[in-house]
Image (tube, rainbow, N blue to C red; front, side, top):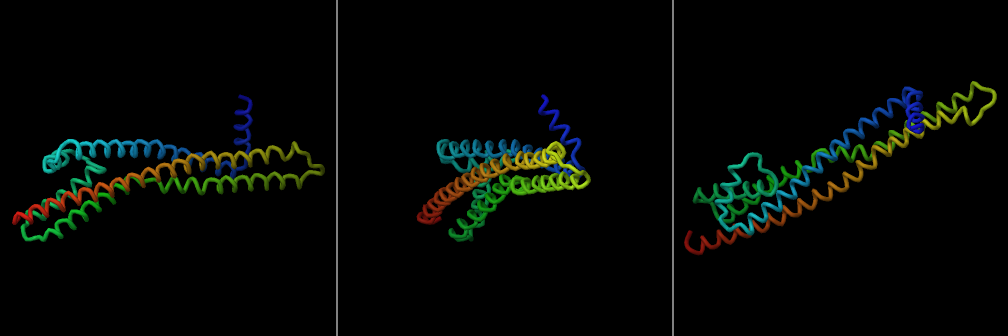
Length: 230
């Protein structure tokens, strides 16, 4: 308890610049933790949704039209299901025109799936740049507060005839608090950014694999229809 009171006293007695630095770092830490908890739920939900859709796609049967109607009836579909829905919708639209070549139908479906994937990756990567910024800048902001606090501590010695450790200790201590606060804000942000960026990349690879497999299924369908005269 005494340690907490002494730290609080150091903050209250710190210079205005150091207090502003500490307030900025505290705000950055709060924002980064809010992003961390939100992204944790978003990415976990994306993984669960991908597993559920893959099981439904590969195990639940081969009636793609019924699967598309079921997904299209849902609101706010994201992830792999949205990639499938966009690709199947574009493929069905081009097929209904009748005059579109098979290669164009497949290419159109691939482009539609790629657009859906890019939107999904953008959703998953949202706010990751903020974590990276907090993780990279916070130590330097804390260092600025440290330098300013130490500078003030030594400047105050110019007005005394005999300097003692007790005179400079509070200024140095408040400066070190700024350094500690900078690390407190930066370390969780860097860890979370690396973790979530890696998980997003894995999901992107998973989407790529599904898009290739689904394109192969569509290609086989087109080849079978062409072989029977359409």
